[in-house]
Image (cartoon, rainbow, N blue to C red):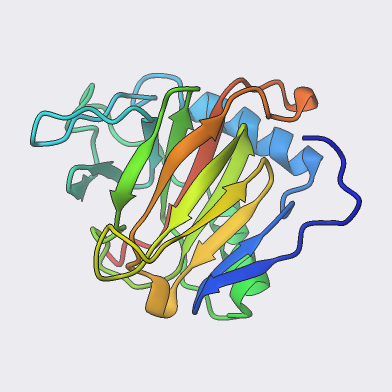
Length: 214
C-alpha cells in the first residue's frame, strides 16, 4: 500500500474486539511467512476444507497443535491425509499472549495451543461464522500477512447486521475476546496485489491463534 500521511490508529470495534494496525514489523512478517511455508508442506499440510453439507471452503487451511475440521478438533488430519497434526511451537504461543497483552491489556492470557492458518487467493472468501468449537473462552488472535482484505466483524446473535467492515493489511493484529469472543465474523473480499512487494507473497495468509481448553 502507498505510504500514508498519518499512521492508522488502533480501534475498538466492540467491547473486547481491537484492531491494531502494523503490529508485526516487516522482519517479523517475513519470519512468520517463512514458518507458514514450512507448515504448509505435507504431510498434514495445506488442504481444502469440505463442510458436512457438501460445501467447499475457498480459503485453504493448515493447522498446528490441534487439527480443526467442521466442526471439531482431532490430533490427526481426519479429513485429509490422516497424518498427525504438526506441533504448535512455543514461540507462536508467546506471540499470541503478547498480542492479547498489547491489544486488551490482559496480562494473564492463557497458553495458546491451536493455530489455524488460512490461505486466500484472489477469489477466496470466508463466510460469517463463529469460532465456537473450543472449550475455552480465551481471546482469539488474528494476524494478517500479504494482501489486504475486508474483515467483517459482526454481533453474537446472528450472521446479519449490525456489523463493521475494517480493512486488514499485512502486519495487522485483530483480537476479540470477552463479550465479543463468539461474535460472527468473515472475509467478504480480498484485494489482490496489495501485499508488500518485499514480502514476496501473492495472496493473503491469516494466522489465527486459539486456546483449546482441552
